[in-house]
Length: 336
Image (cartoon, rainbow, N blue to C red; front, side, top):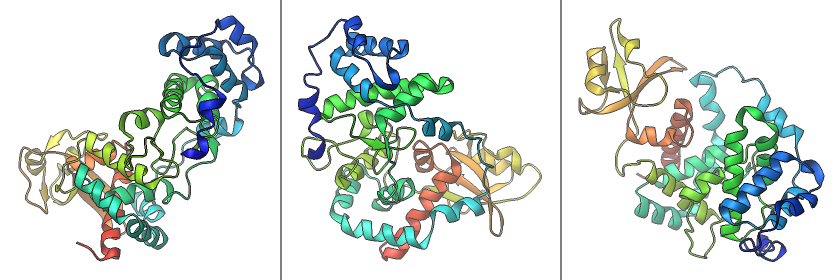
């Protein structure tokens, strides 16, 4: 992350220089000039986290309100795709081929991450593939613009994005990088694994030991950070992800999970007409779901590692795409 170290001199010191808010407000210009919300936010950051008010106002002087971000987040939701439409978006020959290349290129780092965190290499590769096509699509919005726009100009979720803006400024200070240089998605997701700032601060790791965490263009740190995330969210080494189920009877749909949380056990599902293809304990909680496949309905039981994947994105189809892409990567690479 050496290319971004200019932040340390441009805005140093972050800590210790706390200006009077009124003086700092006079320095505000640009899209957020005179904004009471920004002034209040800067006041909180100086009071609660020791930021230097003048330097922080300098950041917001250069932050830009982006209508394209507001348009993107306000778009009506598309029709929810069925599994037989969703799966081909992520499990493609091109993504599998690029994933195999990525795996081979970073084989030693992936093996070390698997050893340290217990998360299989193919799952780590699959996440990065689904999220950004292995770094091809990491987002072209400045994170400061995305989070400022959504934190100050998008009332429905302003509280959430203002929290992420706070986390972003903290991580920039901790990593000694210029917040005006970091880019991500229109919602502020960053780097190869598309971490939000709060996830970065909680789970990202300096996996190459260079003293900085760089998930933007350092695959080692991105790989270690994904593995760290899954480990912290309950991934169990060596355990399966899902189990296919057969169903019979008129109570089958009563077993389907509402949402993501595993609310029924294998035994309870069996009483409703579900039978797993694998030997599972009756007391095991699972997420029970149905997908519309090319050949009709598919019934599945999501196990603890499946739930861990949904913590990355709370979608059954997302988790299945990650899982099945990981299986395809293993098959294409020819390893067991």
